[in-house]
Image (cartoon, rainbow, N blue to C red):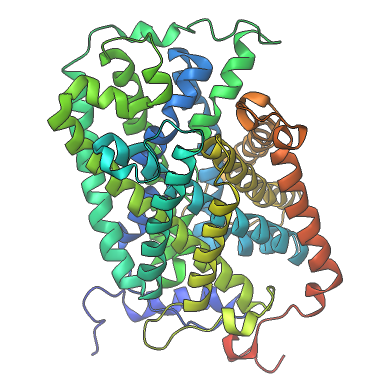
Length: 514
């Protein structure tokens, strides 16, 4: 009698995973080496509690005051509905490029291509957005990291941010090119440190509170002058929370490299978003309760980095900021990894220019190397284009989030239609929403549509808060997302769709003769 190698599932489970892959017409090519914690780590490192909360706390606080905290549970409830839908899909279809393949399966190849295209470009933008977080942390640790100017010049901060971000993107490109094992080791170690640091930070902030939890009822007058009062300010501030809680689908996107993914991926998706909500929510409320003063400009400009230094002092504060830096690094690594898997999945279907080369898996490293490099170069290009944009952080971040919410809608929307038509059948014996599926799916679609409108709304406070003031900057998200969506789909409709089909070298043996 033969036994499975240590760390690998028994042969029947392995065969089931490959059978699910064959349902799409693909043969297994990526090595299954990732275990349960690796899968969880991929999801939670993309969300990255410390990266998200530290990167845009300043924006949320400045826009909505301490009461902006309520956007955290609001965004969680909406995104949790989306995560539940994705968990069902992950149990049924644990394949690379999850968003692309799910949209294709739930809707049709055209919807699948648009979802994949939007998610791919959003991932590239997100790599750039996450990498910018180095600027918000490193100069706080030491002024030596403010390499461009002294930080007081008009473009000192954005130019320096691009320089530091470029170093991080180079790192994520090299790691992803050298194989999934190296990526998984770095990612797992980073997530482990991040979780420990998060718990330590919560404890340290908790023992230094100077005011009660009623602080989250303070709007700080941010609703004054808003057309809808505080609601208008709150909706703007909610972007800070919306930025954090996405990317949980990464756990499923590594399905072809995971052990028993149809069981592990759904659990990882749910655990990642719940853990992020609990730990991130505690950090935010305890930061508001422990900072010495809620007045002044520092908390509205330097955000949680200022709070940590203020509450913990220079020594412990700097140690915590180094942990934030590790979190940012593994977050950028996870985003880059997910983008590569998505590009590979689309190229395997001959759905991108140069698909044959993009879908080639390196026999030495076991990863698609070319898309890894191209994605890194594109992320750098986005940074260079915005190098003289004073609002580089919120502009780049917001545009990336908009496209991700649109891509998610292109999955949950067709999934709802499939439910209503009786076409959706969850995986037997695995994660299923049962009779709650329809209600959860409806809420997920309504939430996604409402938040997409909120994210893309052409507010000057988000897209053109600092001079020079131009209409095209204020409408930047609408214009950019519109060009990406309609321009990309036009290319697909007139050119690429006529070439679509699983490439012969990636097709399952049963599909090669079709």
